[in-house]
Amino acid sequence: MAIGLEDVWDTKGRRTNSESPSADMPMMRIAVAGTGGLARLIAHYIDEDTSHHVVFLSRTTQPQLAAGGYQVSVVDYGDFESLKYALRGIDTVISTVTGVNQIELIKAAVSARVRRFAPAEFEGLPQLRSSSDPLDRGRTLALQWLSHYSQSQLIQSTRFVCGILYERFQPGGLQQLRIGNTSGFGGEGDYIMDCRNMSAQVPAYDAENNPNVVICMTAAQDVARFVTKAVDMKQWPTELRMCGQRILVKDLVAAVQRLKGQPFNPIQWHNPGSLRSELQLAAAQRDSARGIRIQTLIATAEGRYDFAQPTLNRLFPDVRPMPFQDWFIAKWNQQD
Image 1 (cartoon, rainbow, N blue to C red):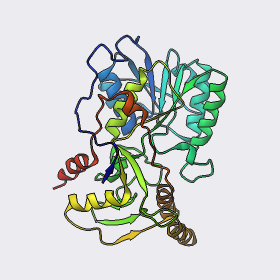
Image 2 (cartoon, helix red, strand yellow):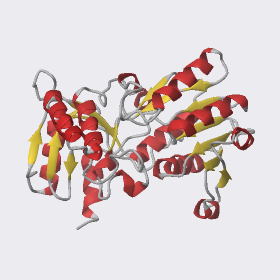
Image 3 (cartoon, rainbow, N blue to C red):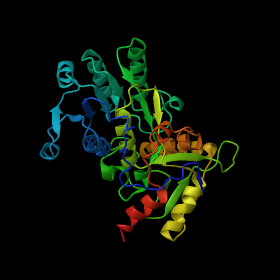
Image 4 (cartoon, rainbow, N blue to C red):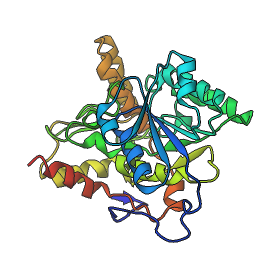
């Protein structure tokens, strides 16, 4: 069963009264780094629900975005002056790029006197991830740079925490939305469940072998809506959490079996110990792709994607996230 958040889907979820935090906010220039699916959703809601101006930062020209009325600045992340020039007059940067590119973007943002920077997190709790973690992709180093600059009061930053994106379980996986293309686990069936072929590797058991592993999940569209609300906050805390549904992993698997009308077969149930054995086997077979997928399951079993106190849900109760069941039915009914 779902734990805690049991929200009803609202297709708009907009605050229409005078208490809206955006009611008296001046127009800002918001740079969205990257042009994948999450970046486009964030830009869409900022453009639709606020008076702010969105600028995409992209390594290549984006004719489709330009035709849609968006400003696109082509940047070279290896050229500091190019980045700094693109960031002139920008108030806030929302990044969906990782690795060295994000580090250079942070440095250029500070030099260009950008007021705020949101790094490419949009996942579980970053404090539970080390810089040596195979899933890190340079994100811990980015947080360290931002912490350094924040302590010097050179820039303000926050980490958006949303848990697992529902879209991991959609036809085509995250890659269908051009999210996580380089992560190694963005394809359909790469995380816990292959909902098309009905096979599953389920990290439902904790270190004491109790079936108590919990994850928080959020639809990408709702992540974008919460981020849009956060843009108009006068001050950003170091972390902003959001959640569409918090659920036991075993109950998530049961729900998908019920919605699909068939059991997972084969299905393997895991705890952290059994997953580490699987990881050793993948390493012995030099199967790095499988190793990355197993790492995500270990992180799940160890609680990286579970958290309490979703700040943005509390601050913006008019944003009512879509329950997983409704989302899943809508996505998979399109395949019938």
